[in-house]
Length: 266
Picture 1 (spheres, one colour):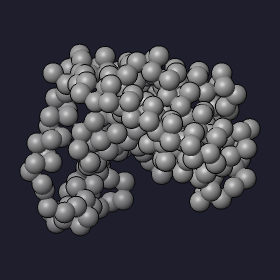
Picture 2 (tube, helix red, strand yellow):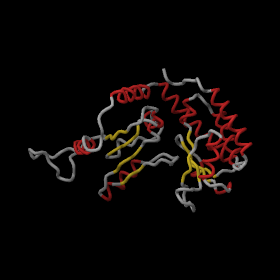
Picture 3 (tube, helix red, strand yellow):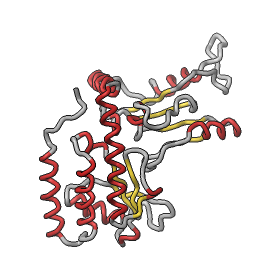
Picture 4 (tube, one colour):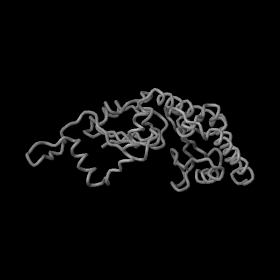
């Protein structure tokens, strides 16, 4: 099986090309779209379903629903393993997936979570939700531009979706130290490995930043500039508790400004 999809990949995927490679070597192709699912749903990124045998996603992250997951297929097909029903009929691949999930690995259904997923999917069908996904991408690009202007190395030079990966080695600070300093300032990022990283996964040389949550609060491109300024101030004064406290105060003021803003939730 060839798996495409990642938790820290800022570009779109060429699913059609990957399917051609999978067919050439006789492999299944699985796409995990847990992170960019909202943009794919609204047609802003490539759709894996016409090309991939299986597609998996979470129902939270950019979809903004409750925590959960889905396994999806486009066109069903007979399983290639020769697994048959007691009557001798070849089972479709979808049946094998269903049998593997329940009752083997899935617990009991939670009706309130199912209802919450329905609400999230209904929102995702709306025009307002597309406005949200468009703004998510605009904000992410503004994030990447602001970081680059301050001398940060943005992996791949930018982003096509909601997230970006920042290599901090030019700033002489590790991902772990950056994450810890930013947490003190009430800014949430996570340490992350970067290409050709020379540090361990427990330390890392980078951080991952995303725009979905701040977009939901109603922030726009100028606010991304403000946020990057705050992040840069912390990272250039990571050992200065007084500076971090000042940034924390500014972060809380910015958060309060958008605390009661509810956007694209009609």
